[in-house]
Amino acid sequence: MTMMRPTRALPLTLSIVMLTLVIAPAMTGCRAAGEARRDKNTPNQTVSKNRNQTRSERRAQANDAVVTAQQKMTEGDLEAALREFERAIAVNPAMTVAYIGAGDIYRRQGNLPDAEKNFGRAAQLEPRNFDAQFGHGLVLQLMNRLGESIQAYLRALTIRPGDFETNLNIATAYLQVGEPAQALAFAQRAVAVTPDSGEARVNLGATYAALNQHEQAVIEFQQAAELMDLSPRLLLSLADSLGHAKRHAEMVATLDQLIRIEPSAIAYERMGSGLFRLRRYDAALESFQKALSMDSGHFPALNGVAVCQLNEFLWSGQRDTSSLGEAVVALRRSLQLEPGQPQIVELLRRYGAGANRAQASGG
Image (cartoon, rainbow, N blue to C red):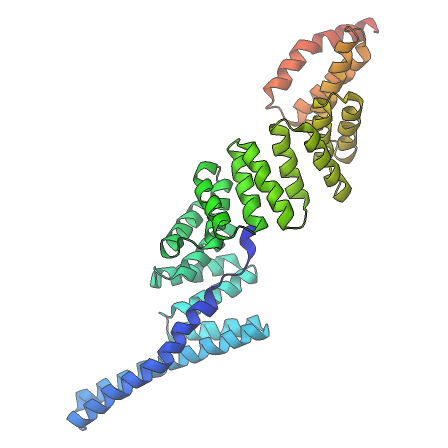
């Protein structure tokens, strides 16, 4: 999915750390000098000065660790970078940038629980930090904790409403939870922000398709095809929407292109569906059979075979009982694989008894 890209956390937040390196020592030095002028020998003032120096030293140590971690990441040494981020957290447990850096490395390593823990802590420490909220949303989405992910993305969008990746990912998350109406505005905004993104066009097309707005989906999928390499996923999505839009000749042409790139049971089954609607019945039956040769348990292809065979039976004036028998066998097999098909149940009820009689009579 779209959501697997690295976050942009470290470079953006590092500038804050560098600013602290410049300002903190100067402020501490001024304060210490003033105290020294007032009374060099007052015990309470000496203790306060020592505490301030300790805090200053800790901040400096944590900042140094983060700078070193960033350098290690640039060199590709993630383990060393992680150690430095964790050292910064141990020295300064309130250092947001260190949690973000550690979280990003854990995510890259596939350690999602620790990544979530670090991004979550960063978001708690600094709720208005965009990188913390975006990173938390991304990891939660990868963990399939989609409701929490959506809330984190929404918080990120209150900080940067026009961020491309956040709009793209939250639209995907809403699609994953079956709420395309909620996804639409975010998918549209992602395209508006980056019109030449093939990923954003695919996402918007998928949203339109889920809303049964297939003509709009076709437009987005076709534009995506011009912007990115053709993939089986994109071609299949385009073919599905062309079929729903009753543009069956284009559907078949798209599926032919898909099969040449990557033949699959689902591609042959959809091809059979398109050919059947173009009244190319023999070719449709052949496509359904090819689908079953690749996956004998692909029940939509069994349904396709059954419909083709029933069509043969009806065109013969109901004399071709062999086709009827093959249709009923396919229908029964389909229901064994997927019982929840009321239309197939109705077809079996209507034609099953006739097939049984024909078999009993030896027809």
